[in-house]
Length: 322
Image 1: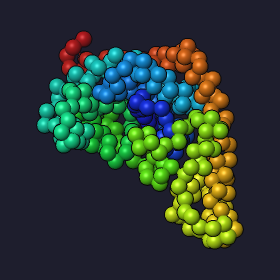
Image 2: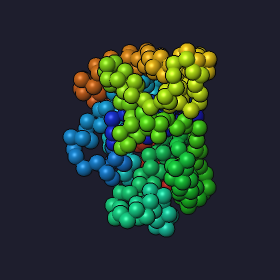
Image 3: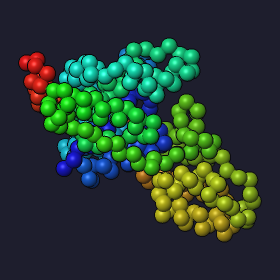
Image 4: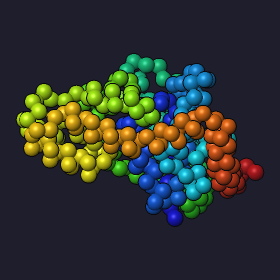
């Protein structure tokens, strides 16, 4: 079975947009692939500067993915920082890459274009990402279109390594991008859901807070008896991404009239609570037991590291360092 690898940066508390656009699709991959999921804490270090915040976000991410259905028995969940071999491979790969390739990295170029002074971590980010992927022989990596360039760099440096050190044999597996049609999840104001925009719905808000936020979603001002266009409404778009069957019924009732936006919001809230309520209970239980989370992450790291060590044994042999 082919291997799929997913990295998750622990930089913010997950919201509904993360769940619909990333978490749920990524977990579905376990039906078709051998799956590895890692918490990319060293990637987050390019921006996170508070140790307590970093620890908290790592636990938030672990508890969230476990609550949403990740099975640590049938897949791997681990912290990037627990696999020291990734940093060794990063150095080896960096010796095969031209600085010009990294200067063309979109994250680095974007930071410069905005007048920033990006740190070396931003510059070297694609190298660490390549090591994350190549260390485990991942065949596919689910990425957004903005990350495709980084995956192409991982393929390029793997080919270069194989050509120089392995007589063109595939010692390092060349990964393929798995670019899904990730939906644009609208926020409370209809714009793309984002914590920085202040329009997001926290994934595990209490039922009371969740309902209050759903009821604040912007809608039209049509009278109750008037027909309404569901396609132009945020509440319908969110419901369609969450539960298409309920959204279809909602659309029919909106077009017919005699059904208000308040009714639509209530139906969406009930669907949302039905989906997230049980997961919230699991999340809160896990988030309150960091020892259990540490144990799950440590077990995943031990299994992941066995793979990493096997790869590095072959890599060291190939480059002449034992």
